[in-house]
Length: 300
Image 1 (cartoon, rainbow, N blue to C red):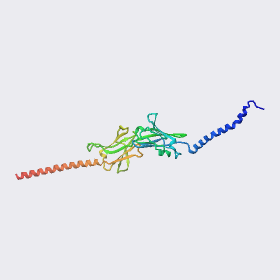
Image 2 (image 1 turned 30 degrees about the horizontal axis):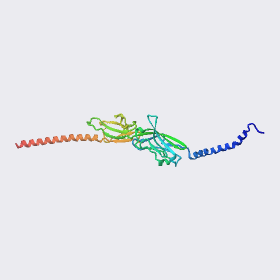
Image 3 (image 1 turned 90 degrees about the vertical axis):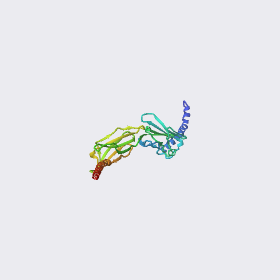
């Protein structure tokens, strides 16, 4: 007996075909997921949160792709961006997609040979202070996409020297030792003074008679600073060693410079030698004059 709405029989009869079609469409999706699970999830590794580079040096901003030792660079893309310290706007530095390769920053480059081996690091020649900021590495390996960020800090080593102040002073006046550091960045720097004597085998920090001037900014954005240590006449000793210690974030270790004020003692000896020489010359001239007068009057 026919059931009302007999088309229901046609619907039931067509269900296996629909299920079979769904199964066929589901196979590529499962295969794609299996491939992704086998290959691993795309991700990038940066050099931590902060990477430090030196002013005017060639820098390599790290961006590695773990789990992908062999990449087809013709089916992938890499883009590098920079966000300045005082701006929220990103600036595109470099992009690479297949045969398309553009450097928006002069000299910026990603090595294709290294990229095939999972290294998308950005190479920048002659980094300047204004290039500090946040760098973003954006990678596309179809159908996956990943990105990483790192803060680039540009620093400059201080060039330091230690010397005696060149000034015309008398022996009873104070003298100064100068410790000068120049061309460093950022501005924060530490200069301390120490002294070594025969009585104490260890350097002892000096806290008095020190004048450290303010930092002076150069045209290129780096800084200079000079610290003075006053030497009192009672402290002028050939066996005393004065030490200037400079610490800056750009250096892994402190810079130490030693100075022994030998010149101070030699100045005293030179002065006394000149005095005795003058006395001797005067005494010799007086004797010659007396002898001349004696013989001259005797002949007359």
